[in-house]
Amino acid sequence: MSRAARVVEADALDFTQYVRSGDLVAWGQCGAEPCTLTARLMAQRKAIAAQGGQGRASGRFRVFIGASWSETLEPEHADVVDFLAYGAAGTNRRLERAGVLDILPCHYSQFREAFTRGPNRVDVLLLQVAPADESGRYSLSIAHEYLVPLIETARVVIAEVNAAAPWTYGERMLRAEDFDVLVHTERMPLEAPAAQAGAVEARIAAHVAGLVEDGSTLQFGLGVLPEAIAQRLDDRRDLGVHTGTIGDAIAGLVEAGVVTNARKTRDAGVSIAGTMMGTRRVYGFAHRNAQVQFCSTAYTHDIDVLGSIDRFVAINSALEVDLTGQVNAEVAAGRYVGAVGGALDFMRGAARSRGGMAIVALASSTRHGSRIVARLAGPVSTPRGDAAVIVTEHGVADLRGLTLAQRVERMLAIAPPECREALAAGHHAQRDTLAA
Image (cartoon, rainbow, N blue to C red; front, side, top):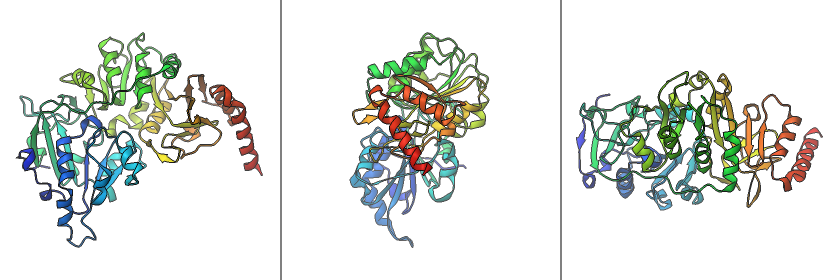
């Protein structure tokens, strides 16, 4: 689709010309959020809604947000805006607590279909891009993931051309004709909030690291724990990366010569990712670095792609796991705090991979109690049939090929020692109830 790009000043951008009542507006998540545009959109939300009418019941419009680090969106914006997200990570938690966040329980691999057709088709796409290079190519910078297909299908594409955003390589480059509006800025992209791994995370990381062989290709989930695990792999050789997101720890492994991608059976020599979630360290690492290639979720999370990578190791986390291997990654204490996300896509890909392995790592308990449970307190995000290797600070439970009774025994061994007797009793009581 060819568009006629207009260059406007940020304070002159009038969203009422582009956003209609009932539209769905979307943008990149975390550091990929075009904050200048999103702040202006929220400032003009009532003017957009005031247009209303046109046979519609209200002047409201919707926005889709991934995980968020910004302070842009406030619960009071729900006066005319409906908020939609795939999870309640980051500052989305404020919207969830206020009861104004609707959840799309969707696997990452399904995002292309979800946002290009049907009731959640995106109408207006807001991007953060790096300035054009000498050939006139704009870079999608921090994120490709679910944004790529929307460039073709959204009615309107508005880009914040951020001179401070890293220029990265990937499957999709852009030119002026891909945009309806360009707004030039210069501001440091958002960075990951500071987080510190503790002693428990260190023990879990040591167990996981013991499962990763030289030459493996790795996928890491989100959070402190995957970063801690990556840091424990500094003595491996020829690791590869094919993942949804890369952060500071992976950048460190590449710089240390641990990640070479030399033994990858697909995309040899390059790290593949959908987005970056880290600080300026990983942004600087990826800037003008052709050995890091960014791709859409249609590629990063495709089960056939993943299954074609030998020794593919998927490392993800969870909120709780039951004694038979069912995983809840969405709800804790009755609140939606996680996401369906891409974990199951990667786990199933690892199951197809020759020599692959799917790992779910989590602390065995919190101050609220055990996270190894007899019965999940939330939904089944990963069925027991897809469970593989569960790791806590107490050890490793490899559930592959085991019966239910054998799984219970393995899972009890990695549960908090003080909870094991009660967990076993709870499991037996539940089994007896079902039998009756």
